[in-house]
Length: 107
Image (cartoon, rainbow, N blue to C red; front, side, top):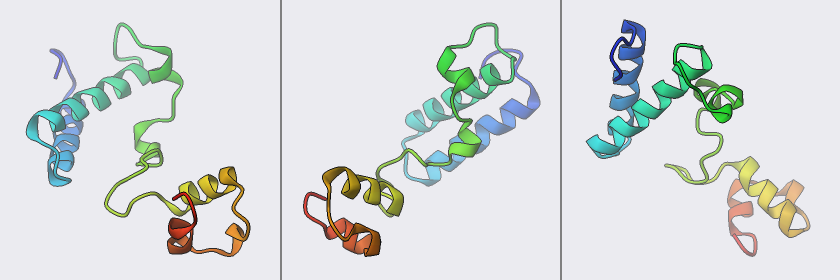
């Protein structure tokens, strides 16, 4: 954590780091994820001296909550599979469930 970080940001960093380790990330990778996330939150709230356009205008990590991940414990979401099927022009996709979308050609 950067010097002068608030106790709130310290707690946030530890929480994110522990969560990443619980998901199976290495300790080094967990620290990187936590530091980047906290830095982004600090930039968004105006606590840092410099901030990229992405970190100030992007969806907050607390709201994002894995929406962009294409894989995880359960793989892609239904919405991600549906959008991929739509892009590929697969007919009957609207009546398919998640497992059927996974099995559709090209998935």
